[in-house]
Length: 327
Image (tube, one colour):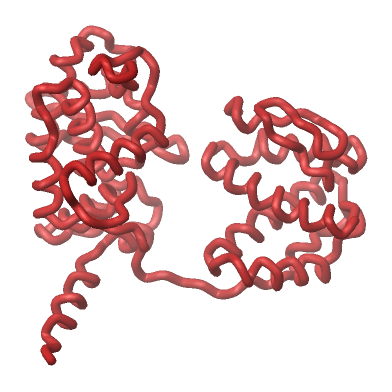
């Protein structure tokens, strides 16, 4: 379990390891409830981002209960329904569903561990929600060209950033997988270069390198002088403003901030994120004759419906149609 999400038993809202607080709802409960709470986050949720999101959701509910002096053993479906009505004034439907998914899983774990007799969340309905297209904005091909052309290729940091963005765009990889890459994960297989990605859910995939991406990676690796450091990190953080790289990793927050700077430098308008390159790559691949099944495999999606969320072709077609309206 990551150090920033590690929790230790504590009474009340007392600081615990990593600077987090164990919510009073659980810290003031019997020891077996505290233990089950810790086990739930340590054992059942392997993904760090999901674990952090669920922790925030659970902490919000716990604070709501604490403000009303509701002890853990007294919580019923009536309390959960009242909580749902309150958070629905502030949260979107997808956030409410995730919120209650976290609570449902936690209370189910309490029942399994004998802490509670029944799961009060199970009977509480949440708003129905479906989405045919994701909200993540994608770049147009012209914007991607403008972005790549804006990098200073005389700078090591420029080469690093171009290569990092290139991996996300050409392989549809999540930022977590990209910043975790080692030098050895860029390897020659016969006459071609492949990238080994360790993705969400423990999935490992080897993606053939697009010739442009191969060029970006080759130039960066040679400039960084890390060809022989096979076990070393591929993308490393900068040492202040020296233009040199450290041996420390660049994390997903650093990557996001870098993208914001690069988008501004390229004079592009829009609220882009790391995930924008995933949507951009998938859309561009499908626009150029790629099939959905292969896009699903490259993206590492278990369900093609998830891949479709990243397809912006219908959105662009709709915009073209609307532009036909002339007053």
